[in-house]
Length: 255
Ligand code: PEP
Image (cartoon, rainbow, N blue to C red; front, side, top):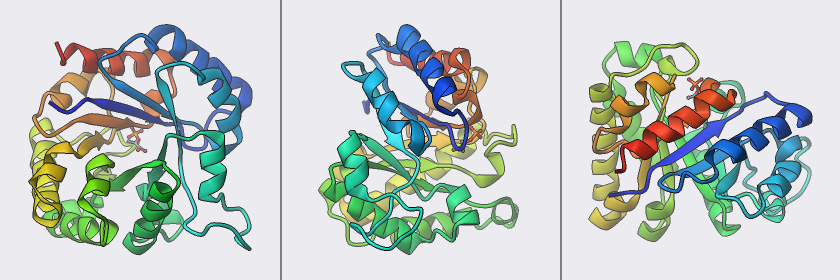
């Protein structure tokens, strides 16, 4: 069985004081939940401070974005080596908000994956269809394209250690959730695409999270599906109680 992984994407929320409070609360309540990999993705300005608070704990740190160039004239961007220096363990790449508002494409996602891996940072790569694509019944095609574009030229070893987050865009921050069966169907498709492109070992090792209005009440149903290995959580990761409860629900499924 793959080890479950729950990641909280704080997006552009929580300045330093709030970020520190949230993470201290998480440490108190979730540090000792050993059955689940736990990751938080605070904004850039809080990364260093949060890393210091997390030192020695079981909770890992993620950035919400990375640039694919090593350095240079890219005003406002953050280089991979800067995230490595802080000690980021993971980085979210290709979130639908970045694709929608900052022109992120499968090609830039692909380049970012390479630069993260080069710096020892594990990518959490987001894929997912829009509401319009969902309604038109073209989810399979969209996912096939995203997987082909995002993971082009990676080795099977690289793919095996990555995290993929399937996030139907119509379910992000909307309170709508894919049913466990709908999510499982897409996760199966993603695993099959990975098997076809990178072999069955990579497909059985790669962890695929579901994201889109995950909350404590729907965690068990979603994560008990065989190909759902965790969750990427937005809104519910901003409250200690709900995020901890999602982690606890996940841990319960492992016994
Ligand atoms: C997200 O932004 O990755 C996300 C899944 O958000 P929410 O949980 O709020 O839908």
